[in-house]
Image (cartoon, rainbow, N blue to C red; front, side, top):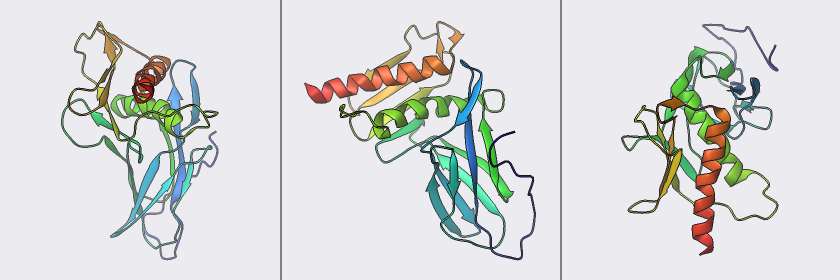
Length: 201
């Protein structure tokens, strides 16, 4: 049973309540479910929207209490980076759930492979930008991480590109083979390290 699990799913609320919940990530390399840290969650009560980031336990909470149900959604971005699909200009986003009271969501490959792929990249990027790196230099600001979701028979795991806009491509498949959580995490950090090197030189 996951921490904070709730069965409360009232369709109509007459009293004020505080939206919130937990986000988790299923690591298919270690077969463990872990808190998903640093994700900015949007909580929309009708026309009012609040935001909060998940903490080290994957927990987030609205700063205010409101009446009615809440729609929860996220964009896979922070101030320093954003994750985008391989095509288009929009940031990758996800409606976690609609018209519910509280969230207790595990993002897994089996549930939604595209969002799980985004979450895999986000975890590594968040570590590089926001974890305690003991004084190490962080990557460049405003990087775009392109999540290449299609099986395009790529022969490399990722690319760091500086022609035009600075962006990183992370490939879900390499030579037709789908990769796992560990692969995406290490590839993302590897490509972000190129960005750090560029800052140094």
